Image 1 (cartoon, helix red, strand yellow):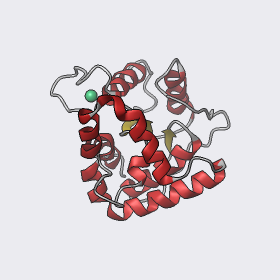
Image 2 (cartoon, helix red, strand yellow):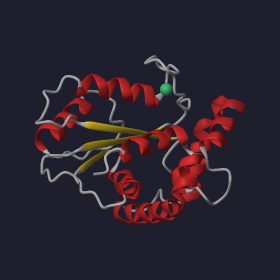
Image 3 (spheres, helix red, strand yellow):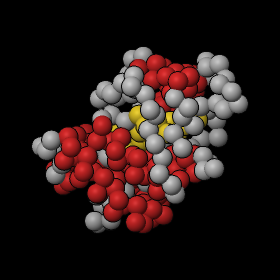
Image 4 (cartoon, rainbow, N blue to C red):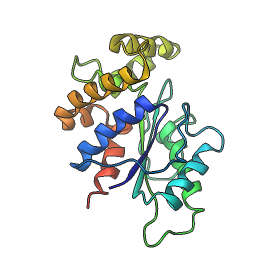
Length: 212
Ligand SMILES: [Zn+2]
């Protein structure tokens, strides 16, 4: 099963693959594309999303694309019954509207439309990887901190990155460490999903639909 990941770095993509395979219950493969460009940074910025999703749709045979971004200081998404954005800076709503706009412009490829699952790691991916070490690593705890002191999010993000201690290593070591952390987290996937219902849970529900 070919599934593309679009994250903010190669380290993040390796970590997401662990979660995707756990949700599918089987190993997935990245697209076999020499032209699959690697870049770092926000996938929703500029024209990158349109070109990378078109490449996946027309040239890879991928059944789906998983996009995961860091939430940073953005508000945690709330599901609404309308297609309105739940908050002006919500990354889930932003990602949904941008991907919907891109995918709706594609000509259908055989019978399979491109499926997209969107995740947001609140605030950065480190909060996911630290899950289980204490009760402090969850969306609700992050939300509490955000509401108690809205201006403090950069400090909390820094604390999380320091707690995991992956910052000053070379990329290969960060990939190895990140994958090891993720493998520990998926040992209790249900509890993890309950702790991150919006950023991870909604994405997980979509990926589970892709099981064959
Ligand atoms: Zn939202």
